[in-house]
Each structure stands twice: as structure tokens, then as C-alpha cells.
Image (spheres, rainbow, N blue to C red):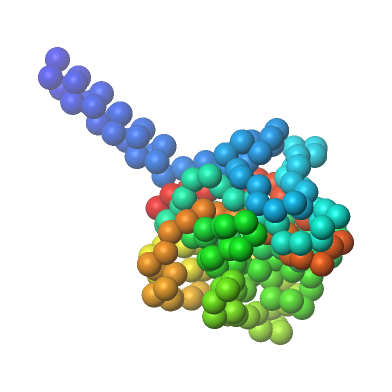
Length: 199
């Protein structure tokens, strides 16, 4: 009996470890549950995809997770239907439409998609070299992987590494994951398969 109990307990531990090691969806494909809108730009669900689109005010807009994520691996796909100037913030906090944190750039061709930008701070930390600018697929679905652990950030666009950055200021921060609409109007980006694994 004791051996059976030990075996069952071991199996429960294994299942628990596997569950904690798995990716969790942070967008349910139906609505914006678990997210908070900042600003007046448009965020909506269409065909099970998350869409961001410039509104009449043509200002910055953000859609942020209600939960904070410190160390994580994030997987997602995006497709730029118009201008496509957007991004994914991590360890971010927002007041109104002023954001503190770091952005993994999502932008039109030749504008550093996959690079790291610090808003209201140091600006560009890593821009993308010219030879990597052809990795982005304009008007098509692109995959993005973001790995944030301690003071290290790595980004991968369509399975190609774009950034490997170590930064003490990033390491000290905590906050939400947030999608951005850039100001200026005319922007439309689709997102799908947003999954995160906490590390």
C-alpha cells in the first residue's frame, strides 16, 4: 500500500511539473478577457484573431495583460495589414497612454522589427542590422518569440535570432505584456496564437 501511495504521489508531482512547464494562452480568441485597454485606439476580435487599428484620434494605444510577467517565454504571430507600426512591450507599466518599459519592435520593412526600444528612457537599445531586415514577411503571418529571464532578453523573428541583450535596468523591472498601436493613424495589425510560459 505504501509503495502504491509513493507511486501515485510521484505521478502527481510529474504531472504538476509538466503543467507548470507548458505554454498558456493569453488570448482566448473570443474577447479581451485578461487584458486592459489604454487610450482611444481600436482593439477587437475578428475571425478569432486580435486586431489593433488606429482610431479617429490617431494616438498611441496599448492593450496590456492584467497580470504581470517577470521571467517568461512568449510566442505569438502577427500580420501587418496596413502601416504595421506596432510592438510588444514587456515588464511595462502604463498611465494613460504613457508607458514605461521595453518594446520589441513590430514595424514596416527596414524599421527594426525584433529590435529593443526603451520608451521615455534611453531609446533604441538594439537596432536590427541591414542584413536581417529581409527576415520580416510584409503582409504575411510572422512568428515572434520573446525570451525574458533576469537581465537577459532574446528575440527571434521567424525562427531567426534578432537580439540577445543583457541589461541591468531590465533585470530590475517587472510589469505586464502590452501590445502597442503607434500614433499617426493608418495602422492595422492582426495577432494570433499568443502563448506564454512563465519561467
